[in-house]
Amino acid sequence: MTDSSSHKIQLAKKFENGVYFTCEMCGSCCRGFKEGEVYLYEDDIKRLADHLKIKTTSELKQFVREYLKIVNDSFFWKEPGAERGKTYRFKSLGFRFTGEDEHCHFLKDNKCTIHEARPFQCRAFPIGWNMLINNVKNFTNYSKKCLALQNSLENKGKFYSREEIILWANEEYKMEKEYFFKMRRNDFNIFKVYPFLSKDMVS
Ligand code: SF4
Ligand code: SF4
Image (cartoon, rainbow, N blue to C red; front, side):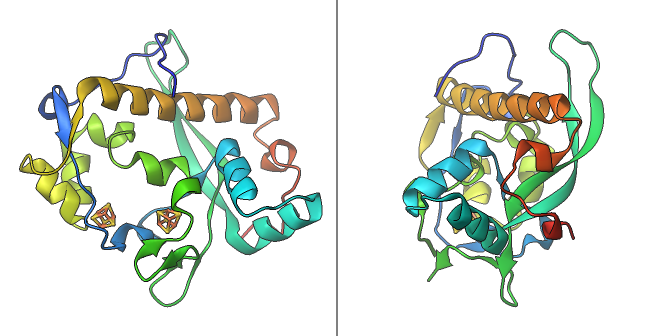
């Protein structure tokens, strides 16, 4: 993980000195995705493909069609040096979910079966999520469905220092920045950015 001096991570006052967090392994955040998505970036797809021993382009295409979806999304971006940010609308990739409870394909008996190769978003929760560590209101809203976040608000769980949080949050910023610029270079056309996607994945 790298530090980035070009962007200043904002921490809410409550989290200025660190965040407590121990996952209770309830699996709730791996279900019910009508309320959110699990996004995947290029590195996530490469890591997953390695882990699942996907070797050929046709295997990759098949995996992508089966497990991923194209998400219509909005994306807030502040150009480096700009005083104000702007909201863009463009597509990104996320996991497809399955079953009545809309669970992640990789969740079995409340355990993540790809734990060591899970996407950044899953690994970084919550300390690498800028929208949570810079906004107690968002953190509190998310805590309604996550006991670990409720405990965190009461300073219970493993302690993550300010430095650790900033490293993770910078990593998220860096990934989003890379994705944004790559999309912009490609006219915000996700099919140019990810040539292994098929057009029928658009919902
Ligand atoms: S909802 Fe919270 S406690 Fe449950 S698995 Fe997710 S992070 Fe852990
Ligand atoms: S990859 Fe693992 S941690 Fe992430 S949503 Fe799926 S089961 Fe949960």
